Length: 302
Image (tube, rainbow, N blue to C red; front, side, top):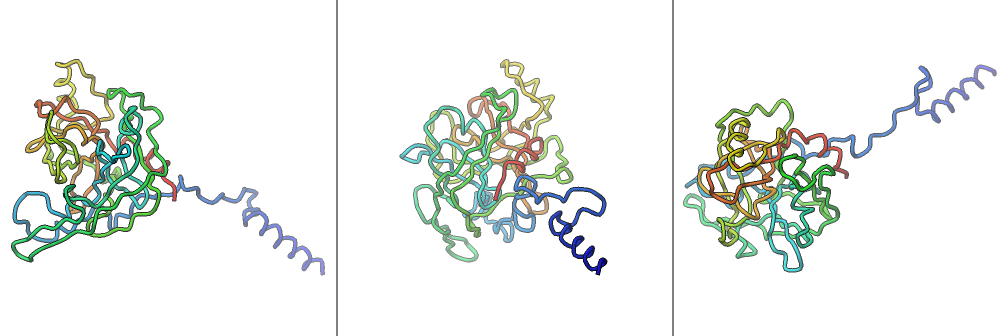
Protein backbone atom coordinates (compact mmCIF):
# COMPACT_ATOMS: atom_id res chain seq x y z
CA UNK A 1 0.00 0.00 0.00
CA UNK A 2 2.87 2.35 0.85
CA UNK A 3 4.61 1.50 -2.42
CA UNK A 4 1.45 2.33 -4.35
CA UNK A 5 1.12 5.64 -2.50
CA UNK A 6 4.77 6.56 -3.18
CA UNK A 7 4.28 5.63 -6.81
CA UNK A 8 1.29 7.96 -7.04
CA UNK A 9 3.29 10.83 -5.46
CA UNK A 10 6.11 10.27 -7.92
CA UNK A 11 3.65 10.37 -10.82
CA UNK A 12 2.19 13.68 -9.57
CA UNK A 13 5.65 15.22 -9.10
CA UNK A 14 6.71 14.16 -12.57
CA UNK A 15 3.59 15.77 -14.08
CA UNK A 16 4.15 19.02 -12.18
CA UNK A 17 7.87 19.26 -12.95
CA UNK A 18 7.64 18.30 -16.59
CA UNK A 19 9.56 15.07 -15.96
CA UNK A 20 12.85 16.65 -14.85
CA UNK A 21 13.05 15.81 -11.14
CA UNK A 22 15.23 12.72 -11.40
CA UNK A 23 18.51 14.65 -11.68
CA UNK A 24 17.25 17.73 -9.85
CA UNK A 25 17.20 19.97 -12.94
CA UNK A 26 14.36 22.24 -13.96
CA UNK A 27 12.25 21.26 -16.96
CA UNK A 28 13.19 22.91 -20.24
CA UNK A 29 10.97 25.82 -21.13
CA UNK A 30 9.28 25.56 -24.50
CA UNK A 31 11.17 27.30 -27.26
CA UNK A 32 10.15 30.87 -27.93
CA UNK A 33 9.65 32.09 -31.47
CA UNK A 34 13.05 33.79 -31.23
CA UNK A 35 14.71 30.44 -30.49
CA UNK A 36 13.17 28.77 -33.53
CA UNK A 37 14.52 29.02 -37.05
CA UNK A 38 11.60 30.68 -38.84
CA UNK A 39 13.42 31.34 -42.08
CA UNK A 40 11.92 29.77 -45.18
CA UNK A 41 12.86 26.13 -45.62
CA UNK A 42 15.76 25.43 -47.96
CA UNK A 43 13.55 22.76 -49.54
CA UNK A 44 11.82 25.50 -51.54
CA UNK A 45 13.39 28.94 -50.88
CA UNK A 46 15.48 30.48 -53.60
CA UNK A 47 14.15 28.42 -56.49
CA UNK A 48 12.63 30.04 -59.56
CA UNK A 49 10.88 28.50 -62.52
CA UNK A 50 12.98 30.42 -65.03
CA UNK A 51 16.00 28.26 -64.12
CA UNK A 52 14.10 25.19 -65.37
CA UNK A 53 14.08 26.10 -69.06
CA UNK A 54 16.36 27.62 -71.70
CA UNK A 55 16.28 31.39 -71.92
CA UNK A 56 15.69 33.23 -75.15
CA UNK A 57 17.90 36.11 -73.93
CA UNK A 58 19.43 37.56 -70.77
CA UNK A 59 16.54 39.94 -70.08
CA UNK A 60 14.62 39.41 -66.86
CA UNK A 61 11.78 36.90 -67.10
CA UNK A 62 8.30 37.29 -65.70
CA UNK A 63 8.91 34.67 -63.00
CA UNK A 64 12.49 35.67 -62.19
CA UNK A 65 13.46 36.81 -58.69
CA UNK A 66 9.95 36.18 -57.29
CA UNK A 67 11.04 37.34 -53.82
CA UNK A 68 11.59 40.97 -54.84
CA UNK A 69 9.25 43.38 -53.03
CA UNK A 70 8.32 47.00 -53.60
CA UNK A 71 8.17 49.15 -50.45
CA UNK A 72 5.31 51.60 -50.78
CA UNK A 73 5.17 54.96 -48.99
CA UNK A 74 2.45 57.48 -48.28
CA UNK A 75 -1.14 57.51 -49.43
CA UNK A 76 -0.15 57.37 -53.09
CA UNK A 77 1.89 54.17 -52.48
CA UNK A 78 5.05 55.53 -54.09
CA UNK A 79 7.94 53.06 -54.49
CA UNK A 80 10.92 54.41 -52.55
CA UNK A 81 12.75 51.22 -51.51
CA UNK A 82 13.09 47.55 -52.38
CA UNK A 83 13.07 44.44 -50.18
CA UNK A 84 13.13 40.66 -50.41
CA UNK A 85 10.67 38.13 -49.01
CA UNK A 86 12.36 35.70 -46.56
CA UNK A 87 9.32 33.83 -45.22
CA UNK A 88 5.53 34.08 -45.27
CA UNK A 89 5.43 37.17 -43.03
CA UNK A 90 8.74 39.01 -43.31
CA UNK A 91 10.53 41.16 -45.85
CA UNK A 92 14.23 41.95 -45.41
CA UNK A 93 15.16 45.60 -45.99
CA UNK A 94 17.66 48.23 -44.93
CA UNK A 95 17.18 50.17 -41.71
CA UNK A 96 17.45 53.52 -43.49
CA UNK A 97 14.32 52.64 -45.48
CA UNK A 98 12.47 52.48 -42.15
CA UNK A 99 13.90 55.36 -40.11
CA UNK A 100 15.01 58.06 -42.53
CA UNK A 101 12.18 60.47 -41.79
CA UNK A 102 10.61 59.90 -45.20
CA UNK A 103 6.88 59.58 -45.68
CA UNK A 104 5.53 56.59 -43.75
CA UNK A 105 5.76 53.05 -45.09
CA UNK A 106 2.19 52.05 -45.90
CA UNK A 107 2.46 48.80 -47.82
CA UNK A 108 4.51 46.13 -49.55
CA UNK A 109 3.75 44.90 -53.07
CA UNK A 110 4.75 41.38 -54.12
CA UNK A 111 4.52 39.53 -57.41
CA UNK A 112 4.98 42.49 -59.74
CA UNK A 113 6.92 42.43 -63.00
CA UNK A 114 5.74 45.53 -64.84
CA UNK A 115 4.28 48.40 -62.82
CA UNK A 116 2.23 49.67 -65.75
CA UNK A 117 -0.11 46.67 -65.64
CA UNK A 118 -1.81 44.75 -62.86
CA UNK A 119 -1.56 41.36 -64.57
CA UNK A 120 1.62 40.91 -66.58
CA UNK A 121 2.01 38.75 -69.69
CA UNK A 122 4.94 37.96 -71.95
CA UNK A 123 5.29 35.79 -75.04
CA UNK A 124 7.86 33.01 -75.24
CA UNK A 125 9.12 31.81 -78.58
CA UNK A 126 8.91 28.14 -77.58
CA UNK A 127 5.76 27.86 -75.45
CA UNK A 128 3.59 30.87 -76.11
CA UNK A 129 2.15 33.42 -73.75
CA UNK A 130 2.72 33.35 -69.99
CA UNK A 131 0.74 35.53 -67.61
CA UNK A 132 1.50 36.08 -63.94
CA UNK A 133 -0.99 36.33 -61.11
CA UNK A 134 -1.98 39.92 -60.27
CA UNK A 135 0.46 41.68 -57.95
CA UNK A 136 -0.71 41.88 -54.35
CA UNK A 137 -0.32 44.66 -51.77
CA UNK A 138 0.14 43.81 -48.09
CA UNK A 139 -0.39 46.13 -45.15
CA UNK A 140 2.31 46.59 -42.52
CA UNK A 141 2.03 45.09 -39.06
CA UNK A 142 5.46 46.06 -37.73
CA UNK A 143 8.78 47.56 -38.81
CA UNK A 144 12.01 46.48 -37.11
CA UNK A 145 15.10 48.57 -37.92
CA UNK A 146 18.34 47.37 -36.36
CA UNK A 147 18.50 49.17 -32.97
CA UNK A 148 22.15 50.18 -33.45
CA UNK A 149 21.71 51.83 -36.82
CA UNK A 150 22.40 55.53 -36.28
CA UNK A 151 21.84 56.85 -39.77
CA UNK A 152 25.50 56.59 -40.72
CA UNK A 153 26.44 54.12 -43.42
CA UNK A 154 30.02 53.66 -42.23
CA UNK A 155 29.08 52.01 -38.92
CA UNK A 156 27.09 49.15 -40.48
CA UNK A 157 23.85 47.89 -38.96
CA UNK A 158 21.87 49.14 -41.95
CA UNK A 159 19.43 46.27 -41.93
CA UNK A 160 15.81 45.81 -40.92
CA UNK A 161 12.68 43.73 -41.20
CA UNK A 162 9.08 44.42 -42.18
CA UNK A 163 6.39 42.15 -40.76
CA UNK A 164 3.38 41.88 -43.05
CA UNK A 165 -0.20 41.96 -41.76
CA UNK A 166 -0.99 38.47 -43.09
CA UNK A 167 0.66 35.39 -44.53
CA UNK A 168 1.87 35.34 -48.12
CA UNK A 169 0.62 32.54 -50.37
CA UNK A 170 3.54 31.24 -52.41
CA UNK A 171 3.33 30.74 -56.16
CA UNK A 172 5.63 30.72 -59.20
CA UNK A 173 5.61 34.53 -58.99
CA UNK A 174 5.88 35.02 -55.22
CA UNK A 175 8.24 32.95 -53.10
CA UNK A 176 11.02 33.58 -50.57
CA UNK A 177 14.75 33.74 -51.11
CA UNK A 178 17.17 31.77 -48.95
CA UNK A 179 19.50 33.45 -46.49
CA UNK A 180 23.07 32.18 -46.09
CA UNK A 181 24.50 29.94 -43.45
CA UNK A 182 28.15 29.72 -42.50
CA UNK A 183 28.74 26.67 -44.67
CA UNK A 184 27.13 28.10 -47.81
CA UNK A 185 29.09 31.35 -48.13
CA UNK A 186 32.54 31.07 -49.64
CA UNK A 187 32.78 34.25 -51.64
CA UNK A 188 35.53 34.88 -54.16
CA UNK A 189 36.84 38.26 -55.26
CA UNK A 190 35.44 39.06 -58.73
CA UNK A 191 32.58 36.57 -58.21
CA UNK A 192 29.62 37.22 -60.50
CA UNK A 193 26.45 38.08 -58.56
CA UNK A 194 23.05 39.64 -59.25
CA UNK A 195 20.98 42.51 -57.87
CA UNK A 196 17.35 43.41 -58.42
CA UNK A 197 15.20 46.36 -57.46
CA UNK A 198 12.56 48.91 -58.40
CA UNK A 199 14.62 52.10 -58.34
CA UNK A 200 15.27 54.79 -60.92
CA UNK A 201 17.12 54.06 -64.14
CA UNK A 202 19.80 56.60 -63.25
CA UNK A 203 20.34 60.05 -61.76
CA UNK A 204 17.39 62.33 -62.52
CA UNK A 205 15.61 59.53 -64.40
CA UNK A 206 12.25 57.84 -63.83
CA UNK A 207 11.60 54.74 -61.78
CA UNK A 208 11.96 51.53 -63.73
CA UNK A 209 8.72 50.10 -65.09
CA UNK A 210 10.08 46.55 -65.20
CA UNK A 211 11.85 44.78 -62.35
CA UNK A 212 15.60 45.29 -62.69
CA UNK A 213 18.13 42.55 -63.30
CA UNK A 214 21.66 43.80 -62.70
CA UNK A 215 24.88 41.84 -63.06
CA UNK A 216 27.56 42.81 -60.54
CA UNK A 217 31.08 41.75 -59.64
CA UNK A 218 32.22 41.33 -56.04
CA UNK A 219 35.03 43.71 -55.07
CA UNK A 220 37.55 42.87 -52.33
CA UNK A 221 36.91 44.85 -49.15
CA UNK A 222 40.41 46.36 -48.96
CA UNK A 223 40.18 47.49 -52.59
CA UNK A 224 36.73 48.94 -51.92
CA UNK A 225 37.96 50.82 -48.84
CA UNK A 226 40.84 52.35 -50.78
CA UNK A 227 38.51 53.40 -53.59
CA UNK A 228 36.16 55.23 -51.21
CA UNK A 229 39.01 56.96 -49.38
CA UNK A 230 39.35 59.18 -52.43
CA UNK A 231 35.93 60.66 -51.67
CA UNK A 232 36.35 60.54 -47.87
CA UNK A 233 33.84 57.77 -47.30
CA UNK A 234 34.67 55.16 -44.67
CA UNK A 235 33.74 51.57 -45.53
CA UNK A 236 33.29 49.42 -42.43
CA UNK A 237 33.94 45.71 -41.98
CA UNK A 238 30.28 44.59 -42.05
CA UNK A 239 29.67 45.35 -45.71
CA UNK A 240 30.16 43.72 -49.10
CA UNK A 241 31.12 45.75 -52.14
CA UNK A 242 29.97 45.04 -55.69
CA UNK A 243 30.50 46.87 -58.96
CA UNK A 244 27.70 46.98 -61.52
CA UNK A 245 28.36 45.65 -65.01
CA UNK A 246 25.29 46.34 -67.16
CA UNK A 247 22.55 48.41 -65.51
CA UNK A 248 22.88 50.56 -62.40
CA UNK A 249 21.41 50.60 -58.93
CA UNK A 250 19.99 53.97 -57.99
CA UNK A 251 17.38 55.66 -55.79
CA UNK A 252 14.62 53.24 -54.87
CA UNK A 253 16.84 50.16 -55.12
CA UNK A 254 17.94 50.49 -51.47
CA UNK A 255 17.13 47.32 -49.57
CA UNK A 256 17.35 45.13 -52.65
CA UNK A 257 19.25 41.86 -52.28
CA UNK A 258 22.76 41.06 -53.46
CA UNK A 259 22.23 37.49 -54.71
CA UNK A 260 24.24 34.44 -55.63
CA UNK A 261 23.06 31.21 -57.20
CA UNK A 262 24.32 27.94 -55.75
CA UNK A 263 23.19 25.01 -57.93
CA UNK A 264 20.21 27.07 -59.09
CA UNK A 265 19.17 27.95 -55.54
CA UNK A 266 19.41 31.67 -54.85
CA UNK A 267 20.66 33.21 -51.61
CA UNK A 268 20.58 36.84 -50.51
CA UNK A 269 24.04 37.59 -49.15
CA UNK A 270 23.75 41.37 -48.94
CA UNK A 271 21.24 44.21 -48.68
CA UNK A 272 21.85 47.35 -50.76
CA UNK A 273 22.78 50.12 -48.34
CA UNK A 274 24.71 52.89 -50.07
CA UNK A 275 25.90 54.05 -53.46
CA UNK A 276 27.86 57.13 -54.48
CA UNK A 277 25.18 58.57 -56.72
CA UNK A 278 24.46 56.36 -59.73
CA UNK A 279 26.81 55.08 -62.41
CA UNK A 280 29.90 56.81 -61.03
CA UNK A 281 32.27 53.85 -61.32
CA UNK A 282 32.27 53.21 -57.58
CA UNK A 283 31.10 49.94 -56.04
CA UNK A 284 27.80 49.90 -54.20
CA UNK A 285 27.87 48.95 -50.51
CA UNK A 286 25.73 46.10 -49.18
CA UNK A 287 25.12 45.13 -45.57
CA UNK A 288 26.68 41.67 -45.12
CA UNK A 289 23.69 39.50 -44.19
CA UNK A 290 25.81 36.72 -42.71
CA UNK A 291 27.06 39.16 -40.05
CA UNK A 292 23.45 39.73 -38.98
CA UNK A 293 21.90 36.31 -39.49
CA UNK A 294 21.43 35.74 -35.74
CA UNK A 295 19.80 39.14 -35.31
CA UNK A 296 17.40 38.35 -38.15
CA UNK A 297 16.43 34.98 -36.67
CA UNK A 298 15.96 36.48 -33.19
CA UNK A 299 13.50 39.05 -34.51
CA UNK A 300 11.23 36.69 -36.42
CA UNK A 301 8.05 35.40 -34.83
CA UNK A 302 5.19 33.25 -36.02
